[in-house]
Image (cartoon, rainbow, N blue to C red; front, side, top):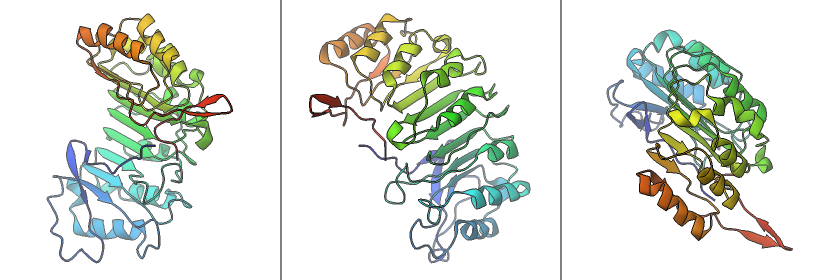
Length: 319
């Protein structure tokens, strides 16, 4: 199984860790607008809460020039949601006029497993920062994503080991006319990923996403159903890159991609972590690779288990 890693970039800027209280006096700070600032506490045995770290951040950095904030670990993220963090960010709005990127929950597995991260209603952040261009969130437990209208957002990422169907429907019902990049990790039913193919249908229709160029619907138990729906989805014709990786993609889904609408206009098709057989992989390379599409067919850690005659297959990121 794969594990999410810390972000290294946000809004085109390298991510810089705002120093802990112990390191504050010995760590030089970069220019406020030259990095994306990761503000973190400790998930376990924290001596300083996230909001206390954020208060130090506001005192030490010219926040009027800050372009991107990455919310890292917060205390007991496995047991507590980010409601106070969301409140602190909203309270700081007058001092964050240049903010264009925001990511909530940038934790790796040693800080908190992705499906242990407690999330909350992220709608107020999108409503409260109408100038945001990039927004991301990691963790599906307790995640609420209501249908929103946002005219500036260009990139939306939701990384989960199991994304609640209601949150998927909220994204699908959102009015995001400027969105170029959409990436959803739908996850597995074992960790709350209960979305069905009908829940993503409005995304595949593309009516609310006129400028979408990258679509990721991945890390899913229902990857074959997604691939089959993608094969005739109107949104695909305007895409440059399509990412159906990290899920349980088998011969059924791979064959649907080949028999559906042409995908030769794509710059890249990412299918890494898959359960495709050799002949079908060769056919994909022949038809799509031969047309100039960059293909990622790396099987990775997609290993099958067999028990009592039943074959078990797994998404790349669950727990």
